[in-house]
Length: 356
Ligand code: ATP
Ligand code: MG
Image (spheres, protein in one colour):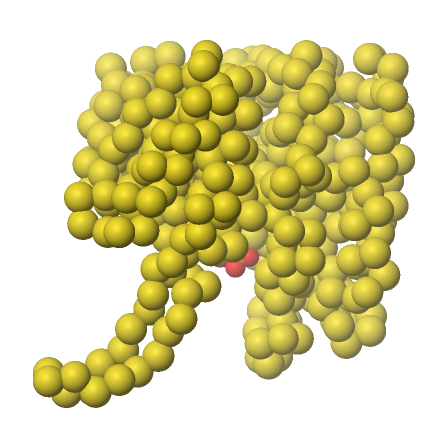
């Protein structure tokens, strides 16, 4: 098959890690007989430098006309003093909004070979860890009405948590669809003992679950979930939750893997069109030095193959190659222990490629 992919390399280490990821993607394409057609467009600081707009219209048009978007990273100290709408980060919000990407998927994957980086007890994470947090991205308290008012306690401020049934329905569907491609287990996280919006959330997730007989659904209050993630993370596979709870829990889940250079992410809309990017930022401190760990971006390609293109086998092939490269001891600086040999971005890419 042929696939059209919009490529936004971005700033800092973005171009280095994206080049690496595309090299892997091409190798997988050659192996399985797929052709990936890339259109490179600008967004972020480099786009601002080019035309004083971090998200040019041409970029949006190309992204909309593609089957998926690959993004490196945007931002850096050079653009820190720009006003809000000109900053590189504005490009990310604009892309999410314009492409209707309401679901943010962040897997927390702990590879067996990197167990030492995990702050949890070894017996808890014996065989590695693979949890995926599905965070609602365009609703809830981050987008509800907010403001100030006078109360009998004096001046006050408020933010409203509001969810429409339809918003919950569509994020729940993303979670269940994903669960079907994983362990068929969903944990919905809310605060339904207190919040009305959480009771609607729970009821709606239950309703969606009726269309997925094979998937088991459980509910957990967010306070308990944040504790269970540390106490017994193995009980989770797919976690689906609100914008704010997901913001917090996805950071918590990713830190139990201990390595920012390893974590992929996807932002999806209703039609499975998605944007795929590493969780880490542009890492200006190591940009242009060939030191960046490309694995987060390479693993984002595995997510793209699975979730946007339905290519499960090809996706697994990438994940297995990454696992083998790590098992064989290949380490970029960010994941190397003292005394371990540190390799470059290009060497890590070649290592993964050799195991495809
Ligand atoms: P942003 O605001 O874009 O998130 P940041 O400085 O807050 O940027 P990162 O860019 O993620 O966060 O960098 C945090 C630290 O992690 C830096 O020291 C950086 O060098 C390191 N780092 C991030 N990504 C990688 C990577 N892929 N490989 C190696 N080191 C990385
Ligand atoms: Mg940051």
